[in-house]
Image (cartoon, rainbow, N blue to C red):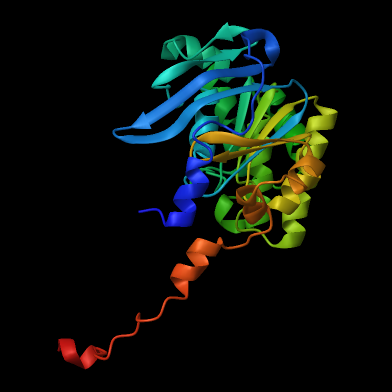
Length: 295
């Protein structure tokens, strides 16, 4: 149940903060029109309209559970919308069947939050996995060169015969990036790429995201809680809150956004209503149980 101040903040946004002209399918490389997703009675995405510019890095921020990961899964139709439409290069894709989507998905790379490498496969086999799945390659010499090129791009050439268990968290992320670009995608989707990494390793990943976007002309869409990362890599930052877009702009515009919800998130501050609840007295009971009480 929402506290009074939180409820007031939500009520202030019965309509999204961000207002703009109606978005058309040709307005971006990827476009969502009134994208809505419900899981049973839970509304996760609420009429999200967004046009993602080709060749740019768009960062999606917002509190846990606001719909960020669900949103990017819709962009490659791993989830299908309850209402609304999704367009890629002006063509609607959310209504395609799985056979038609298989071809579309070769234009996308997906870098998962926990890397999602196959533990039983070597680095080489992990990177060639999408190639084998889509093209059933039998000539291995080009595959050797492909793996070498992709690993070199992320600074991991020479690790072809290693297994994921022997790699650090940062190395796993870099191998996952190499796999994400194995099919020369036009778009890479990153789900929390710096989660669980130390600050220096996180910055390595940030530099690689920038490098791939610049050198390969890739369109990047990044979900993150890491504001330092967001400010460094983003051409555009979009904030979701309760399934709606409440802020949209460049790094400077987001830093100076006037609303408390945005400021609380980007500076990691607890809201006054939640802080008051945490500080309430009466949470310590006179009767305290010990393990011996349950013997």
